[in-house]
Image 1 (cartoon, rainbow, N blue to C red):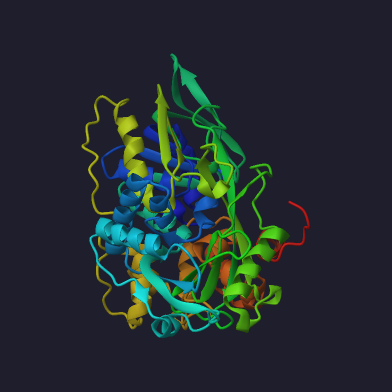
Image 2 (image 1 turned 120 degrees about the vertical axis):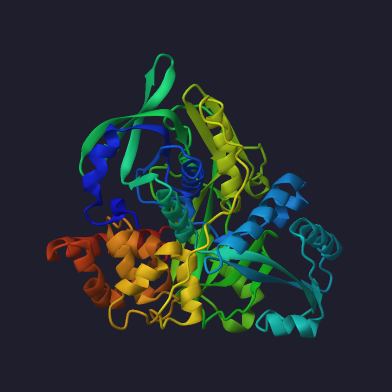
Length: 525
């Protein structure tokens, strides 16, 4: 990893602040990361700053699906579906081990409507992706795929394929590739205001939240890629409708699935899904107007918890699932452009790009299409940089990582590491201590990933390590409390934290986890 992300990397920050950049990207989620990568690989001097941690906002709290969006097709958004399907296929090709195929199964019951339109939509879906699959299964065939679904009235089912990812690791992989091309990326650096000179935006006033220092950074073009927080710096752009999506994580043994199971919620007919993810089962999602202040971290409500559990209890009645089975919860806020729909779920997922002199802003969009969004944003940047002429044609999402020689790691682990860490997978394995090639129980994460994250991935706080560099805080009971001694033994020396600092980080992490990732205690919105 670039030396900037190592323990002493912050020492380089003042020097970076003195440079004049071609591009200053504000926002360290998937959109900002994608813009940084596409700019850097095309020769621009680019800096990204994020006021919290990389992927802290929506980009670590999504449904973790890389999908074409069957619902968008149903709503008539053919362009968005075509773009999404093509980007999904590119990610499957270029990021194996990070973006993987995921089969979906949708049970069909006697008297249920919509079978023909669903199958017709899937035929178009296949056509757009350049693939052909069989989608209808008999009752017996369907039960082989999803044996725990409710059986009364079951008369078959529909199956199709999309993809899944670790969304936070996708952001980190994109940022890492951008830095390989000469870009710089800093977490915990906030943009306080825009700098204007001669009638145009000329950079931004930044504040280092760790060193408590302020800077004015000059840039030829500044990009607002702050997602659901878009517009806070300049007060312009399309009106956003922040929508909260909340999720549950259950142990795989309590809800064992080989396929993702989609269902229509018994209360309102909205789609809900459950699928195997990282050694657990992920359940989602809600789609509600987020009415809390955006500066507060999102969290699930009691009503949303009950809503998702009701869906599981209806689809898997024999399993007796309840609150005690939930390992963790999480909620994210989607940056959806307001379209005037009364039903939040009917709002579109298209993105919008606009500009003024020295400034480009991006709003809306979805995880799957981050590269397409980045290229659209850079077209606006290109119009403001007369000496930069690039065709902005899509290229490979990621460079193929070199082969890792001389390792005893199993093929599946090696595929995972190459997908998540690219060219760094070899040095990650070289850095592993004794026994760190083993998998953390209840997850698919090798202990070695913890050491590498602490050493070389800009971990500033314990929640950076356990909620975004790895996902142990979601996958393990109580956020991994039982394994904290071993986590400490591996990571404390790499981070250079003394005992007092580590104890304080553990306390802060536990409080954060219980407030935002455990079972909700509040009774109101």
